[in-house]
Length: 276
Image (cartoon, rainbow, N blue to C red; front, side, top):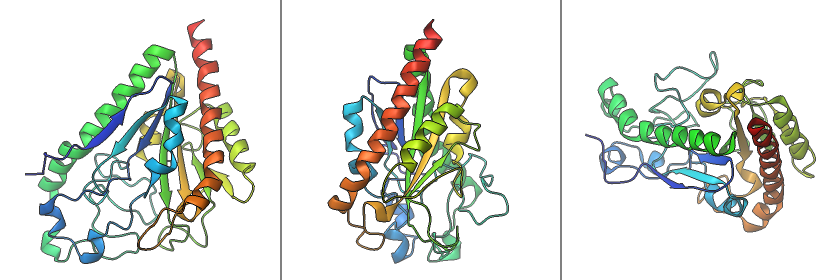
């Protein structure tokens, strides 16, 4: 049976119509899973490290914040519950991953790879509660404000040949090719990202938004979802020990804050319109 003594997420409710989701920041590995992993995998290298610290200013903006506690190696909260590929034809990791971003095995012995029953148990134990909280908070915001904006916060190494060629742009906004949020919001965010001196930006490039962005974004219901995939070199070391770099982080944080302020400005305008 999956471990249930460790809470699957941490949640702080804010007063603004903005929810920041951090589904890949968790590092906890239940002992029964950790024992089956390789020494490399137990270092959880594919974590979206330090995002809680990087987005520390978001509390002052009044955002609600939902943070995963378990490693994506336990279950990937940004994958569909049926395990379907988000990018057909491209290399991807699964709902319960079996390999690292460097395409090395997670499990020391092939016999340790989770079967269908274990995948289902992990999904029910860890994936489902996170998504239930996410859904409930978006609906609460929409009821209270007439609008909700979901910001799905991610980070990744800037060079990962398995997933993309060359170096990734620094600020990768994804809106499921425009399906997950109002075009005006997408363009306002892209304008802020493009104005960030020293950083490159793209909208719906290699990363268009994962399951969370695609599933919860419903502009017709005034729920708008955006993913930001940020290069880790913008604020941290991309190799062990994956240290947070305060000076680098201080450079990118004002741009992140301006994007979130743009999202809030959009939300307040559209919430007011919905109430009229």
